[in-house]
Length: 286
Ligand code: SAM
Image (cartoon, rainbow, N blue to C red; front, side, top):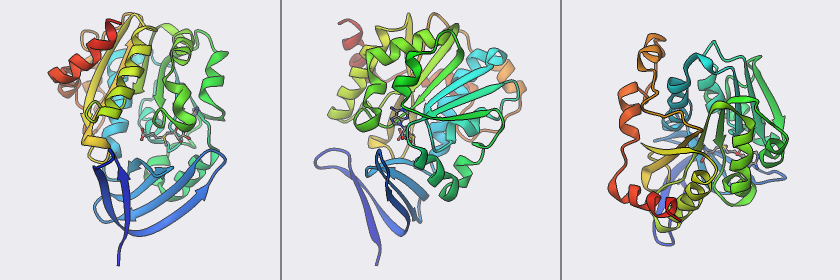
């Protein structure tokens, strides 16, 4: 008989997965950490019962978090900050760029890193790269004391409740602005626009970002195990444009093999459905 993992996405709609094995469970100082194994998605990590990643579809999320800003910023990216992201997926993609000198990963929960290194090695495999500096700290506190230091900041956080709540606030985004170099870029996971509760969280985050940066654009991807499958990301800067400043020729000349990202999809990802545009415009005007 199968165990079943269920995550409710609304009071009446949920994601259900037949689990073959539970590989790990722990209550850390910050959250409950579980790793399961199933037929369709391979191993998957949940925090407080919420899906973080699966072996089968994590490439979509991590490629879109990393290659979109890299293809815009190009060889200028020397120092990168990842906040959250203790699973190592963003770091794995970042380490594919030889010109990046330093990656600071600020993760609040040391146990997420340890558990992913043991149970999800295909994701956490590059956390030992010598360019990666692991700091076990609250990203909200870390960023307060940083100025003009990073070319790229990636916010790979949990959802806007629990330890991740502060990472969606105006104070935090304002501090990210200050921590970026003048021609730097912030990328964040921007929640889903589809179900009402998620759409409201997405609007709140967007409102705080557009008030903190001169330019903020939102892009999308299809991620099967996230609520509704329709996921958004934010791209913010002091003026660098995600499509006009795309260095498609440069990125393609690197010959990186990706499974989701390509430079045509990059452009298309910024063209949003009308209902999503409206949702975002509503808070841009307030
Ligand atoms: N891709 C995932 C998603 O959105 O479902 C996010 C994955 S990653 C595992 C999120 C990480 O953010 C977690 O490991 C969590 O511990 C970390 N985190 C949450 N709040 C944080 C904070 N305030 N500072 C640093 N890391 C934080």
